[in-house]
Each structure stands twice: as C-alpha cells, then as structure tokens.
Length: 219
Image 1 (cartoon, rainbow, N blue to C red):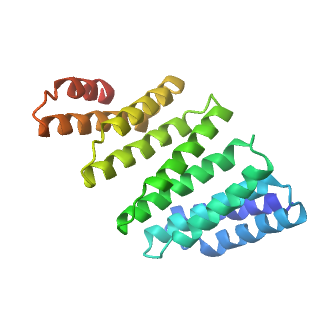
Image 2 (tube, one colour):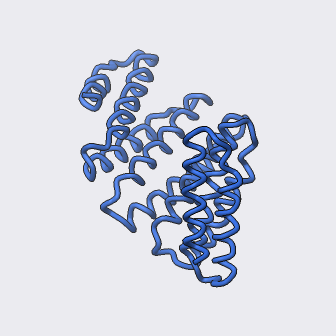
C-alpha cells in the first residue's frame, strides 16, 4: 500500500514539474511513502529503488531551479545501492543508480571537479541494467552519453578523447540494434563522429571517415 501511494505521489510530482509547478511537496510525500514501505519490509528492494528514483527527480528539479542538487543525488545513490544489495537481479535500481551518478558527474564538472569517478560508476550500473534486461535499449543509449561525457572532459583537460568516443559509438550502436527508432541514439552517435572529425582535423589528420559516419548516423 505504501509503495503504491508513493507511486501516486511521484506521478503527481512529475506532472506538477511538467506544467511548471513546484513538485517538492508531492515528491516529498512520495519519499515518505517509499521510506515507510522500506521500514515495514526492510527487504523491499522495489520500494528502495523507487525511493532512489524520487530523490533523483527532486535533484533534477533542484538542478534546474538554482538549488544545489548534490544532497538529493547522494540520497538517490544511497537508496539504489541499498536496493541492489537486497536484490541485485532487479534492473531498475541499477538504472536509477546510473542516472544519479550521471547527473552527479555533470554537477561535479560544472563546479570544477573531476567527473570521471561518477561517470565510471554510471557506466558500471548501466551495463548491469543492460545485462539484466537485454531487450532494453535505454541503458546502452545512456551508457553512450556517459562515455561521451568522459570524452568531453578529456578534451577539456587535454587528454585524447578517442577511446571514450569509440566506446560511446559502440554503445549507441548497441542501443540502435535493439531499437532502430531510438532517435537520440542516432543523433548522439552522429555528434560523437563529428567530435572525432574535429579532433582529427586539429591534429592535421583526415576528418573524412568520421564525417561520413556522422552523415550516415544523422541520416
């Protein structure tokens, strides 16, 4: 009952955020409900995974409204790690954990911190989610985003981004193989090829091959 109540408040909070209202009251009630479900049944991995998802939603709202989201992302990570410790075969806590680390990495990079440890944790969790549900394209697409973020940071600090760009492209292609209509994976693969082309051009190398790949990916 508490888990279902949490889902109802979570849905309300996401709707309020979508129409421009402050969702924190509804999301806070969802946190309370999922927390209560986990208190009643400490082995309730599903409720803890949902709790992580709600903390992530709070962090995303805070991030977009000038509030420091770091605490919410850390609470999301903690809840998902508890869920995974209880039931490592449940895919959605791995995916929520990965999303939280991905968001945390972006916040860290904006504030001058090295995002790679968080990105590495995100990639690890996306891979676990993909292995648990091989028919799901989303973890592969998001894994590509994480690798592409590592490549962007590599460029920023003067490190060769090509290994991470290659891994990003491989991840996007796996996502597209599962779901050929995954538009953002096509777009992101094209951007990765364009980044490779720019890097080759700066080094005096022929950018033609990655440009051709970019055209193919972008249609």
